[in-house]
Length: 125
Image (cartoon, rainbow, N blue to C red; front, side, top):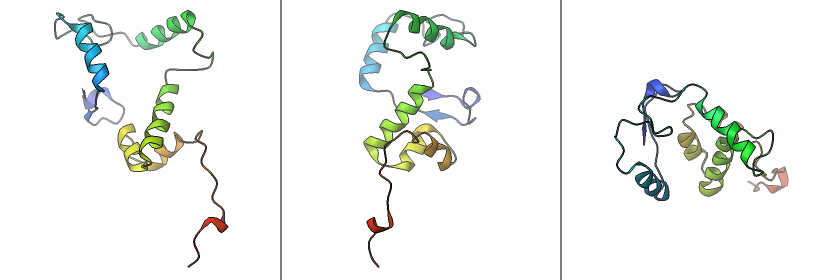
Protein backbone atom coordinates (compact mmCIF):
# COMPACT_ATOMS: atom_id res chain seq x y z
CA UNK A 1 0.00 0.00 0.00
CA UNK A 2 1.43 3.39 -0.87
CA UNK A 3 0.76 6.53 1.13
CA UNK A 4 1.25 9.86 -0.58
CA UNK A 5 3.51 12.32 1.26
CA UNK A 6 0.84 15.01 1.28
CA UNK A 7 -1.40 12.70 3.35
CA UNK A 8 1.02 11.64 6.11
CA UNK A 9 2.58 13.46 9.03
CA UNK A 10 6.19 13.01 7.87
CA UNK A 11 5.35 14.46 4.42
CA UNK A 12 7.31 11.59 2.86
CA UNK A 13 5.87 8.98 0.51
CA UNK A 14 5.65 5.62 2.29
CA UNK A 15 5.06 2.09 1.15
CA UNK A 16 3.54 -0.27 3.71
CA UNK A 17 3.33 -4.04 3.42
CA UNK A 18 -0.19 -5.48 3.52
CA UNK A 19 -0.47 -8.96 5.09
CA UNK A 20 -1.78 -11.72 2.83
CA UNK A 21 -4.92 -12.31 4.94
CA UNK A 22 -5.82 -8.62 4.65
CA UNK A 23 -5.19 -8.60 0.90
CA UNK A 24 -7.63 -11.50 0.62
CA UNK A 25 -10.29 -9.68 2.69
CA UNK A 26 -9.90 -6.49 0.64
CA UNK A 27 -10.31 -8.40 -2.62
CA UNK A 28 -13.55 -9.93 -1.32
CA UNK A 29 -14.82 -6.61 0.06
CA UNK A 30 -14.12 -4.64 -3.12
CA UNK A 31 -14.94 -7.24 -5.76
CA UNK A 32 -16.89 -5.40 -8.45
CA UNK A 33 -16.34 -1.95 -6.90
CA UNK A 34 -15.09 0.99 -8.89
CA UNK A 35 -11.38 1.53 -8.20
CA UNK A 36 -12.04 5.16 -7.25
CA UNK A 37 -13.98 4.29 -4.08
CA UNK A 38 -12.44 5.09 -0.72
CA UNK A 39 -10.80 2.13 0.99
CA UNK A 40 -12.63 2.62 4.29
CA UNK A 41 -15.98 4.19 3.47
CA UNK A 42 -16.51 2.45 0.10
CA UNK A 43 -17.82 5.73 -1.28
CA UNK A 44 -16.45 7.89 -4.07
CA UNK A 45 -15.90 10.86 -1.83
CA UNK A 46 -13.26 10.81 0.87
CA UNK A 47 -14.30 10.25 4.45
CA UNK A 48 -14.73 13.30 6.63
CA UNK A 49 -12.23 14.43 9.23
CA UNK A 50 -13.91 12.59 12.12
CA UNK A 51 -14.74 9.39 10.23
CA UNK A 52 -12.46 7.13 12.28
CA UNK A 53 -13.24 8.84 15.57
CA UNK A 54 -16.96 8.29 14.97
CA UNK A 55 -16.50 4.67 13.86
CA UNK A 56 -14.37 4.03 16.96
CA UNK A 57 -16.99 5.56 19.26
CA UNK A 58 -19.70 3.43 17.62
CA UNK A 59 -17.63 0.28 17.99
CA UNK A 60 -16.85 0.98 21.65
CA UNK A 61 -20.59 1.13 22.35
CA UNK A 62 -21.12 -2.24 20.65
CA UNK A 63 -18.38 -4.26 22.34
CA UNK A 64 -17.01 -4.98 25.78
CA UNK A 65 -13.57 -5.80 24.36
CA UNK A 66 -12.43 -2.17 24.40
CA UNK A 67 -11.61 -0.38 27.64
CA UNK A 68 -13.06 3.07 28.29
CA UNK A 69 -9.76 4.94 27.94
CA UNK A 70 -8.50 2.91 24.96
CA UNK A 71 -8.08 4.89 21.75
CA UNK A 72 -7.36 4.03 18.14
CA UNK A 73 -3.87 5.34 18.80
CA UNK A 74 -3.40 2.59 21.41
CA UNK A 75 -3.07 0.14 18.53
CA UNK A 76 -0.05 2.05 17.21
CA UNK A 77 1.73 1.50 20.53
CA UNK A 78 0.75 -2.17 20.56
CA UNK A 79 1.98 -2.55 16.99
CA UNK A 80 5.30 -0.91 17.86
CA UNK A 81 5.84 -3.26 20.77
CA UNK A 82 4.98 -6.31 18.67
CA UNK A 83 7.36 -5.26 15.88
CA UNK A 84 10.16 -4.83 18.41
CA UNK A 85 9.39 -8.13 20.17
CA UNK A 86 9.37 -9.96 16.84
CA UNK A 87 12.48 -8.37 15.32
CA UNK A 88 14.48 -7.11 18.31
CA UNK A 89 15.59 -4.30 16.02
CA UNK A 90 15.19 -0.65 16.94
CA UNK A 91 16.13 0.29 13.39
CA UNK A 92 13.29 -1.80 11.92
CA UNK A 93 10.91 -0.35 14.49
CA UNK A 94 11.93 3.17 13.48
CA UNK A 95 11.43 2.32 9.81
CA UNK A 96 8.01 0.73 10.34
CA UNK A 97 6.82 3.63 12.46
CA UNK A 98 8.14 6.18 9.97
CA UNK A 99 10.11 8.12 12.57
CA UNK A 100 13.10 10.24 11.60
CA UNK A 101 14.42 10.23 15.19
CA UNK A 102 15.13 7.05 17.16
CA UNK A 103 14.11 8.81 20.40
CA UNK A 104 10.54 9.01 19.16
CA UNK A 105 10.50 5.29 18.36
CA UNK A 106 11.82 4.51 21.84
CA UNK A 107 8.89 6.32 23.47
CA UNK A 108 6.58 3.69 21.96
CA UNK A 109 8.40 1.00 23.95
CA UNK A 110 7.98 2.62 27.36
CA UNK A 111 5.40 0.03 28.43
CA UNK A 112 7.57 -2.91 27.40
CA UNK A 113 8.97 -5.00 30.21
CA UNK A 114 12.72 -4.76 29.59
CA UNK A 115 15.01 -6.01 32.33
CA UNK A 116 17.11 -3.25 33.83
CA UNK A 117 20.80 -3.94 33.29
CA UNK A 118 23.12 -3.61 36.24
CA UNK A 119 26.88 -3.03 36.14
CA UNK A 120 27.36 -6.66 37.22
CA UNK A 121 25.58 -7.81 34.04
CA UNK A 122 28.23 -6.26 31.79
CA UNK A 123 31.27 -8.28 30.70
CA UNK A 124 34.62 -7.56 32.29
CA UNK A 125 37.23 -5.98 30.04
